[in-house]
Amino acid sequence: MAIPTHAPGHAAPATAEPAPVVLVTGASRGLGLEFVRQYAADGWSVIACCRHPASASELAALAERHGSIRIEALDITNHEQVDALAAKLAGTAIDLLLNNAGIMGALPFAENLQRQHLGSLDYKLWEQVFRTNTLGTVKMTEAFLELVAASRQKKIISLSSTTGSISESQRPAFAYTSSKTALNKAMTLIAEQLRPRRVIVTLVCPGYVQTRMNVGGATLEAGESVRALRTLVAGLTLEDSGRFLRYDGKTIGW
Ligand SMILES: NC(=O)c1ccc[n+]([C@@H]2O[C@H](COP(=O)([O-])OP(=O)(O)OC[C@H]3O[C@@H](n4cnc5c(N)ncnc54)[C@H](OP(=O)(O)O)[C@@H]3O)[C@@H](O)[C@H]2O)c1
Image 1: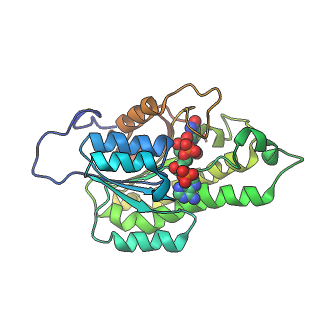
Image 2: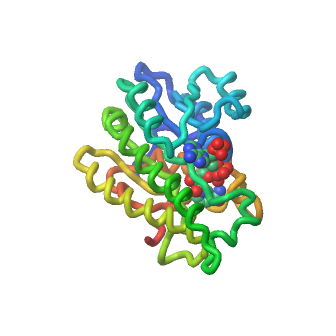
Image 3: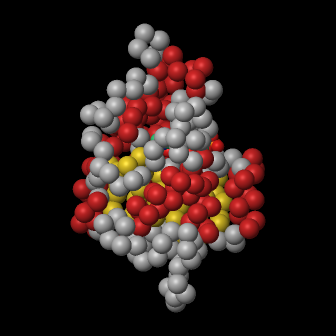
């Protein structure tokens, strides 16, 4: 990993170069909202995508404070909408595509956990989770990769989960965990295909973070996780493409 040119949380030194551009999916809440907050504070130009901009009040308030935040409506399971946004942004070099949007399952999660357990599996729910976490993330990558390849930093980062690791986790939430396992495999294929073009494609786990997805015993606050992830992402090189890394930089077994 390379040393970042400036520490996250501190503004980039004045330069003639344009601000780097990050596109964040699932920016309405949780980690996505925190990525928007921190990258905007750090001087990045942020394309913040969310399903329902009209009800994303915290994101709207952030955009009021930072002119560098542009909000776009985007459901990553809607492939026509994904293609339309990529076409609308044609000519914009995207330094960092942050595939953050994801779902654990039906809400409230604790009450619906049985639907992801053997004996009471809900296959419709499984399809929905797979359509979002796996197919939606791959579709985003496919639609936006030319805009990323045209940028200076050329990074595609996807939020996966240690629970998707076959060797490190036995958590029996079938839909969520297998959707991340499949995402891991797909992104490693993409990493190899894009390596000759020097695009860095890396999977990260944010840790166990207090968001709507994980309210219970989560150990990390979103701000803490995102600060660590931004430092990690800033230091990634082509050697890290195709890897699966925890927010603290440690490699996660497949
Ligand atoms: N929190 C953790 O401990 C943890 C651990 C490992 C991995 N992760 C991963 O981190 C990422 C962010 O999770 P989080 O903890 O911040 O969860 P969260 O608070 O539930 O936020 C999830 C975000 O994804 C959005 N989203 C869901 N489906 C979408 C779709 N079809 N199209 C576009 N956006 C969609 C949600 O939008 P709405 O507001 O419209 O619902 C929301 O903004 C996820 O990929 C998750 O799997 C989280």
